[in-house]
Length: 458
Image 1 (tube, rainbow, N blue to C red):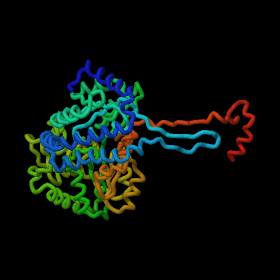
Image 2 (cartoon, rainbow, N blue to C red):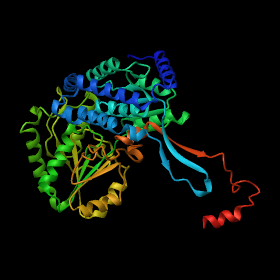
Image 3 (tube, rainbow, N blue to C red):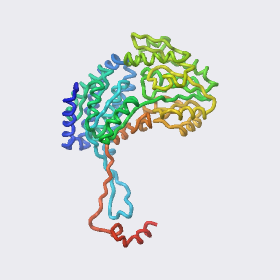
Image 4 (tube, one colour):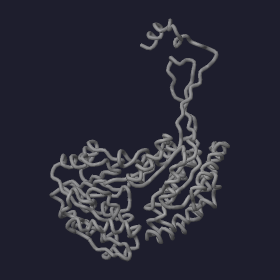
């Protein structure tokens, strides 16, 4: 639906009213909704592929790998495990509480807002929705206006599948986001930039609304002197050119050991050619920059250093070739803002402590990548902080749904993936059940039994 200031409050109230009916509470009902979502994703998969190509020039193969297959996997996992996730869990009770039993129950938070970005518009809208449905929440979905074709298909999918008082799609630009954020929500799931994350956090603060913020940052990619250079270059080139670098966990800048710099540059050129051909512009698997504004911003970085590889661009197509950039100033734009594109600044190092000093002097990134000896990688990870990390790989930690994904500090807060997504949309509630048949005197004034209690607890 196209939203305005008059329709949004009414929509939110309708979802609150629906939630209060208790319809979303039975696990059996939630699983029925998950099956409906899975069916509609399968039905609309080809239209989604076509829309992703039109808006981002994202190939069908990449759209499957990075968008729909992940969503379908998340739904299937929820269907398989939801009864176990939602089941009350008994925990130990101290002897001082006798006669009592203790349980943890999982209750839905209520009316939720999910705001998705444009770079993975299907995955990052529907994966949180799986968590909302699994937990028993209602959801208002706000897709990105920068991918209008995809957003329209998503709206058709959701409106065909769910009543709007349960799950609704709201379209619009930042003024719509602003109006949505003035409403009182029980939970907010936001994916976007740290700057916009602060806006969301400020809007949530008056009502102390819990939230997950999936943000980003400048994720370092470090290559050690003993790395397998050919394999490292291949995996790094893949991670940097996936979605043309428009990935929140894309390697943002390179820290190459001085001894392997030239060898790495040579192998990186070969890796890009192996992935995308001699003319990257003609590759069917190379995405374009999403908007003219984004394109001009990333293109401007080409002037901030010496080009070691790549450097070609085409304004009409918003195309920028994968580019290695040398001799960059640490205070330049390319080294102080998240690049979110296929430009790769190159720095060098000699000693691991240089790496630690540099990485730790900056905001905590969403990802941390090291190529080389595993022991060195673990040492660097142990002495830095990031949302997630890979040793001898890039991006793939996100693809392991058995591990939670989320940021830290400037790169975000909260986490999700499978059970973690269910937990994000749930309130973990502690329930103590004390028998009324026996009433021990330990806790009552004037505490005459305290001496005995101390002996028992020794």
